Amino acid sequence: MRRWAITISAIFHPLIMPLACFFVAAQFDWYIRGTTDPDMLRITLFVVALSTIAFPGLNMLLLRWYGVISSLEMPKRAERLAPFISTLFFFALGYYLLRKGSLPLPLYSIFLGSILALVAITIINLRWKISAHATGIAGLAGSTIGLFQLHNYGNLILLSLVLVVVGATLTARLVLKAHSPAEVYAGAGVGFLSLYLSVVNGWFI
Image (tube, rainbow, N blue to C red; front, side):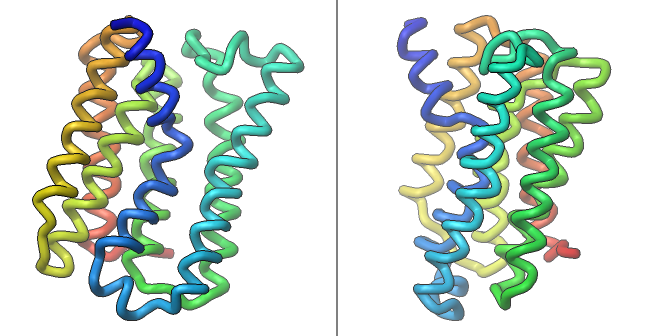
């Protein structure tokens, strides 16, 4: 069980979730597919991958190398501040670059929602070790459901798959005893609300 929990936690790492949100939007949302050039979508996914996975991931490896964090899992609350803040910088940089182009508003809302979620857990982490895994995976659910509501469509298979993944990830964090139930559920609430509200209300900067 523990081995499965480790695998699930690695596959659905928080840094991967913004790209997952964009991928789901690009593949399943009829409005985004119909109003965006395929080449532009590919460029967008590439920028998101660089700014939310590649650069933050490399930065975390450097922080581990210099001893700022004890491991990539960052088990101690205090050592999460530097990775969270530096990741926020890369998220903001990616958002800035995408705003130079012309994309459907929901894509900007998804990215902004991801940034808001990261800001929220960074602030909360000053006092409490909230679950970033739960925030990320629940953000995917919030983004997906928000798009359903915004563009008046539904995909039962996609929704079921997302909810199963959410449940599996939250369970994995509890099995590994990486967080208390309250930390996991709070992280899920922050992630879901940040992405859902951002998408439904069309928030962007």
